[in-house]
Image (tube, rainbow, N blue to C red; front, side, top):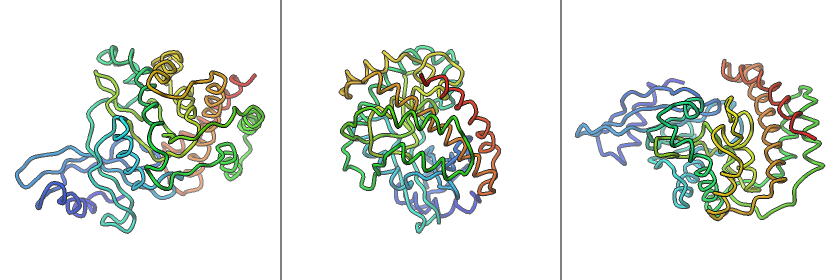
Length: 322
């Protein structure tokens, strides 16, 4: 993607907020982002004041998710509900000035790399509070009115991910077995809420004071709120650490904070079901992302590397099943 070409049109977009003569400086792609392009930059006003910002762009062949314009609406709704969120500065669709979907937001300082969050001595005090903060934040996420952002989908999650696995066209017996077990052991249906869909270590910004912002709303939808809690506990998001909640906390810390903050009562068996679902889902996502690389849709070492993660998730899944 030609970032230099975007600097001019992006400056024109930001002039509405920062005044005529606003200039884009230092636009460069950041690490990570298998399904979106994330860029850091500054906008400099005519008076010379610099504002650090983040630009997110859609990519060809990316995993299906919410349009970036909807992500922007979700972040605004989340902020209104008490979720720590970056301020959205501007957004637009494919027919807009950048020729692709985009969202510009304030740059929140802090750590996003999970292994640093789990090991940096400067974050030791914050780590002790992270599981509880996650519970409080998820309770706020699930308070977002279901009609606050039009167009959020409510699909049968098992049918959705079974169809995705079938569409990959590769045999994955362990994942198929996991889906069958999940179908036979479904928890009772509950009143749907807004679900973040990818709330985990790696999609939060952490500072010495704890969680400063929640990122990446592209998979948000309507569903069972325990889906978010189960996803946070998936083994992959512990990044080699022992504590089950994001690698930094215990189940009890998460659940007690969530319920105290107004979240629904957590059934432990249902939470285990959603954690098992999360492991299965991540295995399918890894297979799908690797297929994007293998098919030539988007050649990427990062996507290819995810292919080896399939077996890891299959092993985790089999160990979780009775």
